[in-house]
Image 1 (cartoon, rainbow, N blue to C red):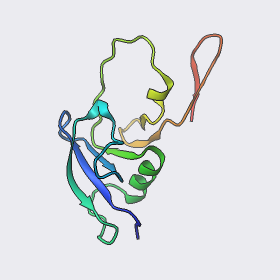
Image 2: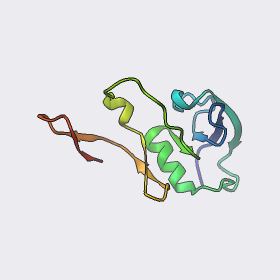
Image 3: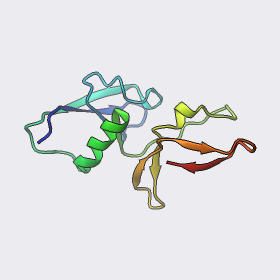
Length: 119
């Protein structure tokens, strides 16, 4: 049995995107995919109501403070570089489009600046 409530939010800019978090105000959800509107609360004593694996959601919330469920929009950027804190926590998908995890850290080759390994 879960010991905490989860809160399900939907993105107002990407209608099929849901964010699940332990914060009732959704403050840990990515600002880039918001604004977020709360849809429901899932209490610890109720059966898991979502069509996504509960353990996967719990891991995402534990690791990142949130779990994103649904198609994640690609945001255009005019910057030629990206800060490491913006990459950490980014969703990773397999070739079939299934989410398989998130980026925890990068290893960058000093001379070329190329990413050589992602954890």
